[in-house]
Image (cartoon, rainbow, N blue to C red):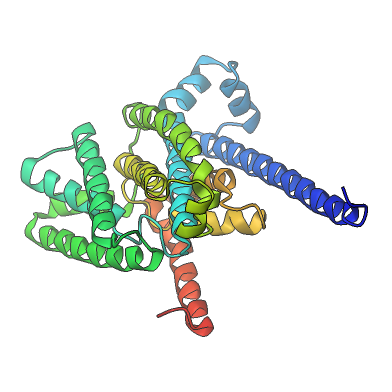
Length: 348
């Protein structure tokens, strides 16, 4: 190697090492924070448990009373919050990175609206509930994602075209939801509203196990498909020149991201803005580390766990749906992002 180049190569290697070290430290910190939030959520309730008892029980100790309260009453909901947030956070990171658009998340481009519309119609017309309602919601999310992709495809897919078409599809589906809500009786409308708000109230093991099974399948598939993400970020021509199969790789990533959002929506309803804000937060924590998929998933898990805890305990005697709490965080961020885009001349 040319001796003149060695200092530059050494500096680049040092920057990469610092970047990897920061990535690992941030990921470990987010994982620890998510575990701490899990323990706190298990500790508080009608019957408060000391944190030491909670940790002891999680690792196989504790008395029978504490074991029952945690394992049967609180743990399913807390684990569901973690897993729902993880799926939404990872889904949003894939969408935004692949399409190179900060507005590209499943709740913005209509995927969540598709799940909601199908679920509301299935509940009102066919009387479905429980696992069957979750299944049709998942189908609705996947069909909507496929429809948006096909409508946006013009010898390839660009980020802004897919976002605009997704916004249009999502608006139409939201209108369909509103129409059905006006035709439903008060009880059906209230049930539909709670589901559409995104709620973990009353969730237990029957809702957790299907989501866990889907996550065990989808997370490795997403990790495998994400190997092409770095090349695809460079543009179709450059990615093709580097040997990537552009359309196949893009379709695989979009399918994984849509499925992740779909299974999370099926389990907890369309929890708003988690997919939208998790990736930007993670990328600010690990700048220069590309898509930051792992930090995005951990940020989503932490966000939903904390939001659910706030929703349970903010108002005495009232449990707010977790989606309302996350919307309080996400809506101002969306307005700020749009305002910044307009100032920069990229807002359209």
